[in-house]
Image (cartoon, rainbow, N blue to C red; front, side, top):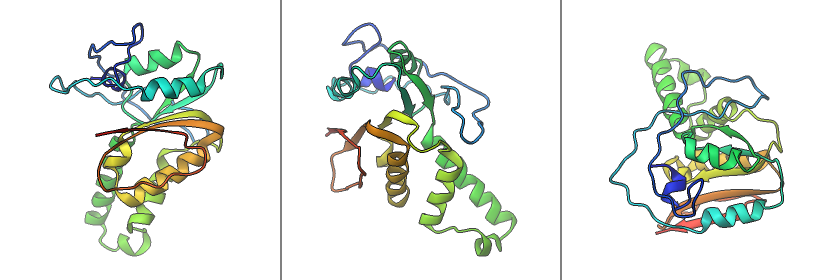
Length: 204
């Protein structure tokens, strides 16, 4: 089930809850400084998930009202519902499946260490070092590239050090007055945010 459906917002109706399939792609590579196509990984809809109506996305869109043809970065798997929703509203959408990319990055590190145990002496394997190497390889956009970023709930699934550095990195990617949609599970955990983060839809 796509996130727009979870939030109770469809393309043609304000209460659509119909599950959709994500866009798929075989090659997500892109050159530094260029915008990748809006594609993402395949994810089978989890039909047992329950839909919940939220005003978070509506408020997010309200803050973008009047922007015109802006640029948006979607950090979740690329769902056709989400892409169509924003493209029809004049946005140029880029998509980065950060959670999938992080898993692949960790797998590559483990493969490297198994093949060459001495790599730990030349490659920074600390949480901060890994986070920096990951962000340099996966969010390769010039500063102030986006008017809006859809973070969804991914910060709750990243390691604390990576989550903190991701927030700082995304803040650099936002244009002045940029808007972010981020959701957090209610628990005793705080994720720092930088200047320009204006929307945080919280869920219990």
